[in-house]
Image 1 (cartoon, rainbow, N blue to C red):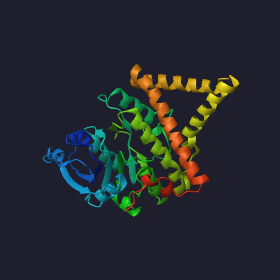
Image 2 (cartoon, rainbow, N blue to C red):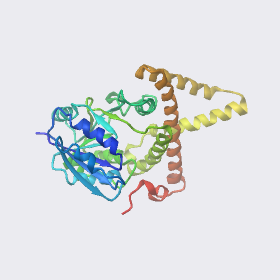
Image 3 (cartoon, rainbow, N blue to C red):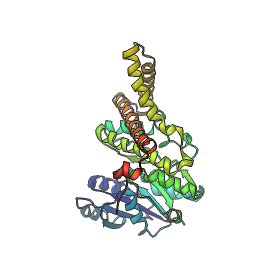
Image 4 (tube, rainbow, N blue to C red):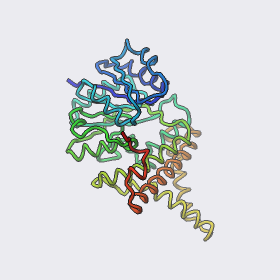
Length: 333
């Protein structure tokens, strides 16, 4: 029998916690526990938890701030069940989420799994645009939203399940504050564990609610990738550098236009822009979302590309250690 412990690491985000717990309380399969790990929040989360104590098997722990990865480790050590399900506090799950997880585990052989993220109909326009750019074939290659887009799936911690025995074998999440979830996936592969994509266990992921915060978050993701490449050289792909090529190509397109009065490169970006717009329009059926999706796509590509380039130079040209180049990316005891 499949037994499940849901682990939620949270820092503040009281309103989002309410929406997540509310969605969990309506599950068709109610046989699971929920472990909330308060990662040093500055607000009191207990009143929110009290609202659900009759409907959910809830356990609450509060600890000093250490980042999401180590907080999830803290929760996993207190989990009683065989499967650990990690979900971020800013997601909403459908009523059959647990039921579908158990169904998939019974028929698909794997040690860890992930599911898609998507936009809820109640999200605002910016959230829907960001959701598009984060799952589009024109940005991430669709790896966050389509099992057909990849051959080896890297579960992400906003929607990730791991067999507890495998999780403990690889030592859980690392001390990385950013990029800790692909780091875990690659540690699992290196220890001959398998991962899979569960098609019907998607979540509604709210992400950031404005482009400024989104840009900062994506920049940090870009910085993390060269660090991950150093840790796991066997799994380096040239596609990881695509946003940097995109950024550099645009820069040279500007130079080409002003110095040589030619617009060949910028013309290619114009075609790319049209492709993104009409694909987003097809996916979302909303002109406003499609227009904003163009903006979020360029923000994502430029921010990630710059973060990747900066990190690659610091690590590979100047030879800095990741912990020295990006101290905020690591927890220091």
